[in-house]
Image (cartoon, one colour):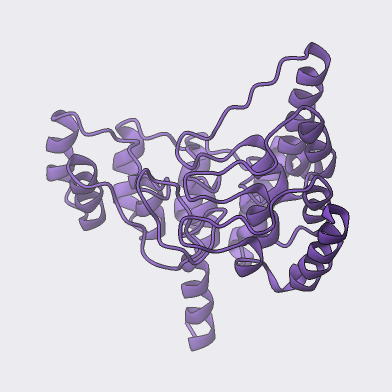
Length: 298
């Protein structure tokens, strides 16, 4: 491959160390943020040994660890499983071994990336074909609403995934909207019943409002705010919904949260306010919203 191709592939591999996050240090309990481009840190003890053995391709040690009770679907702080890692490493033998021994082919990491997303992003067609043959979904979206097809960049991979999408009769637009529709349905149900389930993500501590803010689900945000969701709720890294909306460049979400008088000076666990982690596209908007908020408060 050319240097350009290699650089592109390296870039795509970097995408696998992500979550709704900033360039902040991660902390315990694991909150999962990961656009820091550092290799994911594993939980030590048995889980780390198992992941290391899988990465090394040592199937005998992996068998022994599984016999000793190592969880085959155990994750590191980014939610990556051994199967994700084997896909990223283009280790077909380990991919097959893990799947044959019970690894979950559709298990998402903290950003919703399944092993098929990982294989698609890296361009590993044979691994993608194998995963699909074992039930990997071509219609599942990650946290940014992307299907495996959306993160593929090589023609052979795109051809494979498009063929599978057609064969399965998947409506891509419906698949991409599925999470937003589910969240809308839940929010409306809570609104009608008067009962609100403010459940947090077990790994990241994110609320439904964090998720809706990060993805720009405007109607969901409106409903959640009407239901009394805490506009300044913190996840395990101290991020508020505004941090998430700002970081992922969601202008409408930023407006709605600021109109609800969120705390624009709220700091995360490393002292960053929303504007410190904001995407360039919303930096000037945040300044404008800050001025408007000050006028309202005064």
